[in-house]
Image 1 (cartoon, rainbow, N blue to C red):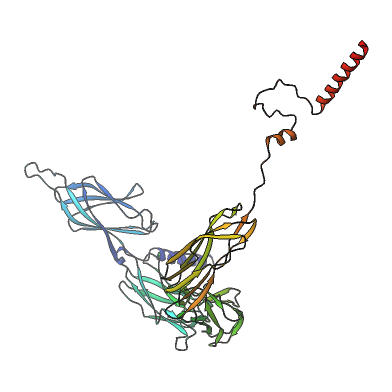
Image 2: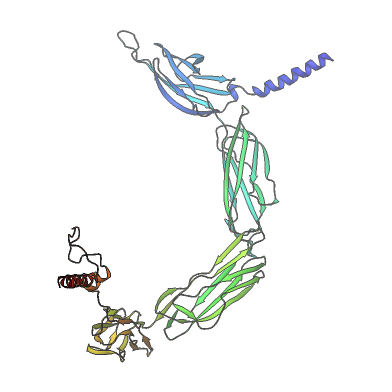
Length: 530
């Protein structure tokens, strides 16, 4: 029993030994990595220290001989691994089983530079080409019939047919090759998402792999990346991997196409008509869609219309949601606001669909009229200047007449103009002024000025100006000095601020008392003398 167990252990050990060292130097496919020229005693590093799978070795020219040989050493981590004496075109192969690395040195050139007179070498050099064990690398090509898939279109494919081509573009055979497809969340319709290939020689291309994926039904346009990973082992059992992806675009399964149309050009006395239609361009119903429209600020509704509705759409259904008329307010070129449709899908997300913003051109004159005064608070008898201004802010010329015909009672016309008659081009202005005398007290509102206009298209109209107010009031008299001193008997009206007065202040009425007392005293004195 013990012997049987020992035999099994030995067999397992042999299997692992063979797995770890299943190849010899003769089995290696080499890759040239670097060529360097060394002087006597000089060295160079080969490899990349940052790459764990590609260790760094130091090659040094230890010695030269006059008969054309060079002694090279191979070191790693400060320790000499091996030394060899090589001549022209010689190769030296070293296998680092501990680190799983293989190195090959090839002598391309040796220059001993022997002096004919002394027989000594003068600065000998050697050109060394360094090879490393080749590893597999993969070129992956992913192709699909289309770059964009639309599940709403009957003629569009229902599957994403994906073809995958794998080529070993490396420097060694690949073993135990795995081709793994990540379908980006799409369901597999046909084929396998994982394919195994026993081996793939250098420069060999594997048979084409075909995978069919179902086109997903999504609520929004989405970019999906089909990712292919190729993973394989090299002769030493090390894993090598390459990844490639292909992007496709999948259109939404349902979408509202909102169309808004408006009359492109009208005159100021004409009507513009607006129509809003919505189509469910999809394969799913869309219920409780909220639709909102907005009227141009330069136009107003002719009729009472509600521009917000909630509508449901079947697949492929088109509904005219709004149809209304607008009358213009002011000429110009305007952009109509977009119509917005809002839908809450079954995934809980809210999706918004907008119409285009059609333009409309409104033609005609647009007369603006205003009055202003140079004073608003005056005394009776004051003269006030009134100015009447007009401007054509439209895009057509207009023959314009402006007049002020009435004046408030309690005022008198003094001088100036009270009318204006001229053809105003677009952007042109005109004005006139007159003077009124304000006779009576009170608040006077100026009557509105009136403007009438007509253009070459026989479009005519009338405008009324604003009505400024003028307040006429007699000012209250200012208080005199006597009344001031009476109201403040304790103050001295003649004294200057900051000085003291030596005069005694006598209260009013005491002078007469003093006089009577004095007369009484004189009368008593005369009587005593008698």
